[in-house]
Length: 216
Image (tube, rainbow, N blue to C red; front, side):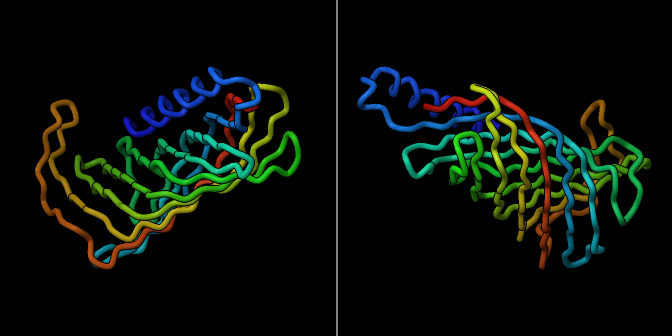
């Protein structure tokens, strides 16, 4: 999260520099931040893992900063998810999943004055915590690549609506199996831990977000 906030500060610093210049010296800038519902679909497998599907509704945060006539820049996409479907077993205790495309390269293509096709690619991190009703759980931290593609609609100035999906492929993961979890005191016993051999996770997370944008 700190990288994301640093990114926002950096972009607004660049924007402030643009305001300090004469009109003739300004270059095109398109910046937006939006949030809204999403639903993540994740397919995981690996050695000593049962092939599984996890369905996770949640909140998606989307940020783009594109510069110049070619609409090239940076972006990030964060998802805070809550697994409700798991094909391996039912989880009764609250579970959480974090799906981050960290700071990556973003691009845009203007379809018309109010509609843009946006897409980007960057490193992906997926943190999946599954808790059972027996105070045990599986904890995964996966690493890979992620992409984002969608449409940005600007119905009025300073307002944007985004419809799109993220796609991710994680090829490495660290796993911990925990027992006797005491959530109040953050205590637990680690039964097994280590990197998962032959691990892979494919993620598809469609979203609809609304937010604020600035462009000139």
